[in-house]
Length: 119
Image 1 (cartoon, rainbow, N blue to C red):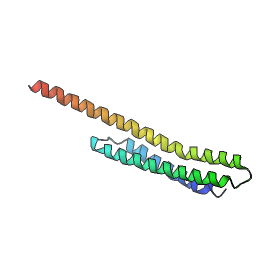
Image 2: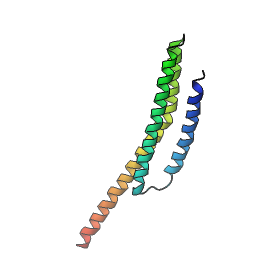
Image 3: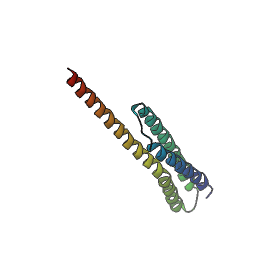
Image 4: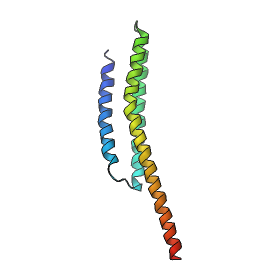
C-alpha cells in the first residue's frame, strides 16, 4: 500500500486549494479577472493530469500483484476521491465565469441604451 501515500498527500493539497478557491469566490470579480479564471482552469487541468498519471502508474503496478481486481478497485476509488474536489472547483469557476459574462452583457446593454438615449 505504499502507492496510496502520495495520493493521500495529493488529496490533502487539493482540499487546501479548494478552500482557497472558495475564499476567492466570495470576492467580487471583475471582467479582467476572466484571465485569472482561465489560469485557474489550466491549473485544475494540470492537477487532473497528475491524478490521472498517478492512476495509470498505480493500475500498472496492480497487474504485478495477486489480487489485481481489489488493487484496481482501490486505485479507481482513490482516483475518484482525488478528482471530486477538482470537479467542484471547475464547477465553481464555470459558475463565476457565467456570472461575469452576464454582468458584462448587462453592462453592454445599459451602455447601448444610454447611448441611444443621448441621441
